[in-house]
Every structure is written in structure tokens, then in C-alpha cells.
Amino acid sequence: MFGLANPDRFLRFTRPLTPVVWGLAVVLLAVATWFAFAAPEDYQQGDTVRIMFVHVPAASIGLAAYAALGVSSFFALVFRHPLADAAARAAALPGAAFTALALITGSLWGKPMWGAWWAWGDARLMSVLILFLFYVGYLALRASIDDETRAARAAAVLGLVGLVNLPIVKFSVDWWNTLHQPASLLRAGGPAMPAVFLTPLLTMMAAWGLLFLAVWLTAIRTEIVRRRVLSIRARRALEA
Amino acid sequence: MLDLDMGRYAAFVWPAWAISAVVLAALAARALLAARRWSAELRRLEAERPAKD
Image 1 (spheres, rainbow over the protein chains, first blue to last red):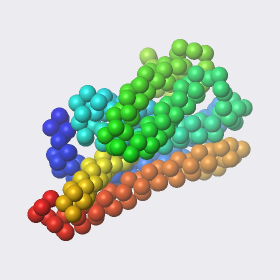
Image 2: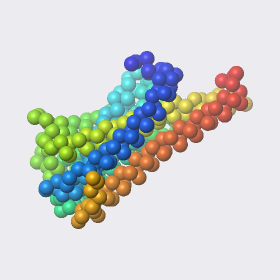
Image 3: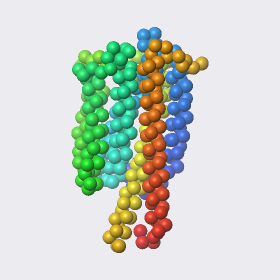
Image 4: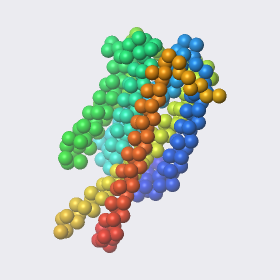
């Protein structure tokens, strides 16, 4: 596993793997979409239950992507490993996009079900908004410092600090009284939903997870190649 | 059989799915195009002076 921390080995290992992950993600997305619209409408939520099939995967992957960013930032800071920094950087944009989708689709579900697009006093909504702001801060920090080494170190510190927010997002519905409903998947006693909704939801989560993995692997590979290009250009500029 | 009639919730369900589809497609396209661009640039540089680098 740690052998993959070598960029050359990582490129060799992920070269045949990445297209397979892309292919699986596309197939699973099609299957999950079919399941989502083949499911019956919920007796309370009506057809808005279908928003859950995109909202829950977006929120889960947004959270998981930040965990990947934070752990990679830790390895980048402590071991100064360039691949860890590339992994953190590559997780930031897709993570921000997934989190933004969670906020937007949650809002589109909230209006017909709660009667409000947004609730400022809700701990789950606010902690997810803060997660999105950590992503934006990370991307902005990297973009604002010209020296890539300094930018990477500063962003890694921010990435690590943001890890504190992850358990707050997860447990906000248990620690505070929130408008947002409590956990219905990862909870004691098993998922609190019937199989007709659980099957499309889990299939969609697997599809989005694979899509994130495909985008992430591709972006890490691209980052390694980009650094090689910059290094060759710098060397040639010195020689000229 | 697929149920595509979202009834009175159509104005909420379809935008949620449409925005998700656009964002996922944009993420995928961006990742694949960047990969192609930087790989082509590396190949070009290596073809110029393969021995020295």
C-alpha cells in the first residue's frame, strides 16, 4: 500500500485501474438512475423522495472527500510527500462540488417539505455550509500563493483544521435539536427505510462514490504529470 | 416501469436532478480534458529532448 506513495508506481498501478473505475461509475449511475425512477413515491414525501437519491450521495461524498483531503494533508505536512499533497489538491474541487450539490439539492427538498429553502439556526445545515467554506478557503489559499511549496503547506494546515468539522457535521443531528432529520442510514438498529428506497439510495451512493474515485484518481495522475511538465520547463529555462 | 410524472413536486425534483447531472458531467469532463492536455504537453517536451531530461 505504502509502495504506491511513489509517484511512478502510483502512475503504473492506476493506469489500467482508472478506466475500469470510470466504466463502472457510468454503468452504476445508469442503473441507479433507473432504480431511482422505478421506486414508488413515498407516502409522506411524495415524489420529493427522489431528491434524496441525489442529496444523500452528494452529502456523503462531500464529507468523505474532505476526509481524504484532510488525511492527505496530514501526510503532506508530516512526511512532506508530494503525492499526498497531490491527493489533497485533487480532492478539493470535486469535494467542493459535491458539498455544493448537497446544499442545493437539500434546499430544493426543504422548500416543499419544511416550507423553507434554508434554516440559519439548523446545526446540520450550518455545519455543511462551513464544510463548503473550508473547501472554498482551501482552493482560494492554494490559488493565492505563487510559491507552490508554501501554498501547499498553508493549504495543508487549513485542510487539517477543517477535519474538526467532520464529526460536527455527522453528529450535529444527535447533539442538537435540528430541523434536519436524524441519521437514517448509519444508525444503531440499521437503516430506517424500506428496501424500495434503500436499494436505489445505496446504488446511487456507490455510483457517486465510484465517480468521485474516478475523478480523484484522474486528477492525482494529472497533478503528477503537471509537476513533471513544470519541472522540465524550469530545468530547460535554467539551461537556456 | 419508470415513474417520470413528478406531479406538484416537478419544480423541485427535476432541477435537483438536472443540476446534479450538469455538475457531475462538468467534473468528469474537466478531469479528463486536463489529463489529456497535460499528458500531451509532457509527451511533447519529452519528444523534444528525451535524453537530457
